[in-house]
Amino acid sequence: MLGAIGGHAAPILLGAIGGHAAPILKKEAMDKIAAPRGTADLIPPESARWQDLEARLRVVARRFGYGEIRTPLFESTELFVRGVGETTDIVEKEMYTFEDKGGRRMTLRPEWTAPVVRAVLEHNLLANGPQRLYYLGPIFRYERPQAGRYRQSHQFGVECFGFEGPEADVEVISLASDVIGSCGLEVTLSINSIGDEVCRPRYREALFAHFAPHKDALSPDSQRRLERNPLRILDSKAPQDRALVESAPTMLDVLCEPCAAHFARVRHLLDAIGVAYVVDPRIVRGLDYYTRTVFEFQSSDLGAQATVCAGGRYDGLIAALGGPPTPGVGFALGIERFLMIVERRGSAAALPQAGIAVITLGAAARERVVPLVAALRRSSDGVPVTIDYNDAKIAAQFKRAERANARVALILGDDELASQTIVVRDLVTRVQDTLEARGDDAAIAERVLAWYRALGPANGAAA
Image (cartoon, rainbow, N blue to C red; front, side, top):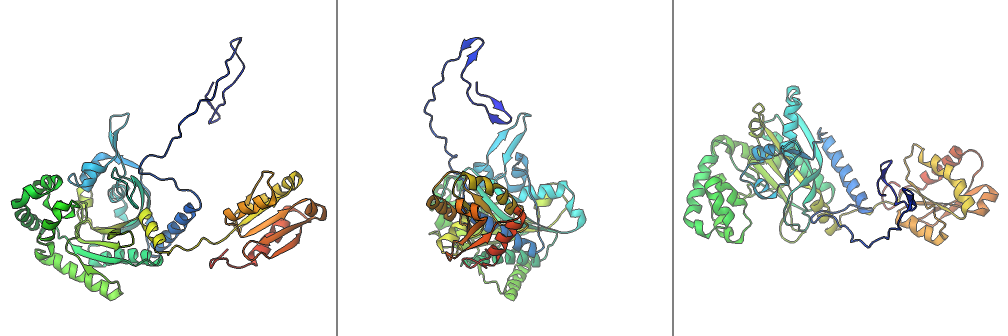
């Protein structure tokens, strides 16, 4: 029978069942199960590159005074309908929505800002004043998989609540610029203002007047949006819409005085801190909650001009989700696309060789080395320690040490057992030494680690 034993699948039992001989069950060939389309497994050594980037992102966020927030993978569908906007592509086409066993409509998180706002309100964080938060984790959107874009992808982003002045806009843009710059990427920052509830209605009227006479020439999506929200037409990627979008009036033509002054101040402060930008009146962003400043960092390293990081101000979102009127500004950066650009530009640093690979020759050496490996792993140095427990030849074990990107090989065989020594070899320089292996395992481990520390950095990074 196949069942669960201690949390694991139980083996098929061959023998007597109810006094009768159990039949021998033949193993049938089965098709392999692949990951769902639009998703990807993350395996070594690529996972180490993700960890390196994630560590860098956390360092920059903390340097700007942002703390991490984590929200559930799924939320009430209503949160995204109200927060993101029911006329957006996300809500209309891309959400993974299901009904749970209690009959509630739930949606896998398609973006982070609305869930972060929900959490801020639920935990009354605004009672403690302005909030600076960052997030790092997966989102889910049903769309056509393409370069750097998956149905399960990952985002890093920040949200800054409680500051209505342009200083907060510039702080968030500066944080994104520092993240991108730390990886040596060349990007273009484009900024725009899409106004607020005062001047945006005038812009909607201007857009409707521009597009309505050409309704039949628009894409089906844009025809549907013309009446509901003509601003969304500006975000269309349909070829038949491009000429009309290019000739449409811009929001900058109709900004009210406060919005115009805010945008002018954003540009002035970006100039003051030395962040280069271009004004692009066609940037609108694809979510309904944005107001005033919107921005995108773009790169041409994926072929067509691709957005690496984007965001903006959303002063009405918290109130729309039931909270007090509170300004906010933030951005999101797609991890998969970002790493793809880093790799294509050759900006990805080689992973430094680090750690110790233990190589044993014979069963006696393997048995002897187990407590030494434990002592090495218990050390405060945090040095990675790997060991091959199979009875493999030394050449094969060295190859596995190289695949593990180890810096040092610790070698133990019959000769070393007899002389109570161990051999340590630097896998970068090929220099090796023989260390005394007398005493308890903690003392031997300390000798090995002292030799390891003395090697210094490898591949331009700390070993």
